[in-house]
Length: 253
Ligand code: ADP
Ligand code: MG
Image: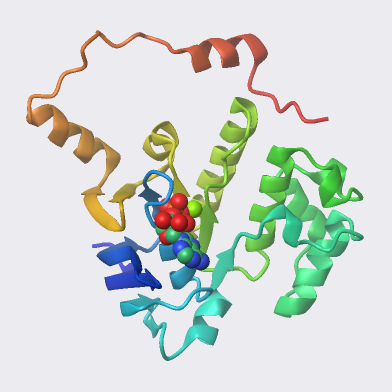
């Protein structure tokens, strides 16, 4: 049996008179990639930021690795890695200096070049964040989440706006992080991404969870209800054509 590392019970978030999260419950297993899927405005970021201790909830209970969010938020902060937006980094520092800065903040020793190598950014060690491409910025921000050696990392739409090569490169990085034993929670509105990456997904719409299971189980359930695609599946799609013509290698120099 998988261990539960996050448990969310009847979570509610009101913004004034508007209820953005309407009493959702779910559990995340240790070591899995768990996806929160949903259209814009569904409440994904709100839910994530509450668990990350960055937003105050209106109601409900959240436990992270046995720690109660209401009682021990600072202990929770120590075991999680949260992705920052590119604009959140000191503009004057290069990648190595930023890593060293975060090591200081977290009181951790990390080999900056090894970390950059892991996210395929060794050649950019002396660059500033603003000089990176979109995909490089995202890989760097994922690297930063790893500095405090977290048990869980949170990624909020990490691939939005990336080209297909950069997206696939980030997918491989996320899988690699999970293989090291880190639990990953990711939000996305790309269903191909969720199907490829996530062990289990919760589909959120208008503040409610409307389905929760593995992608395969959700697809099987739909088929069992008699669903059929109107046209026979093509053996490839336009993205396959694009990747086949332009290759998997990153284009960001
Ligand atoms: P998602 O990440 O799924 O796109 P969000 O969690 O960002 O959704 O937002 C859920 C709903 O709450 C949206 O209708 C959004 O407009 C609203 N909302 C988010 N943040 C605030 C805020 N700080 N004040 C008021 N409404 C907000
Ligand atoms: Mg969001």
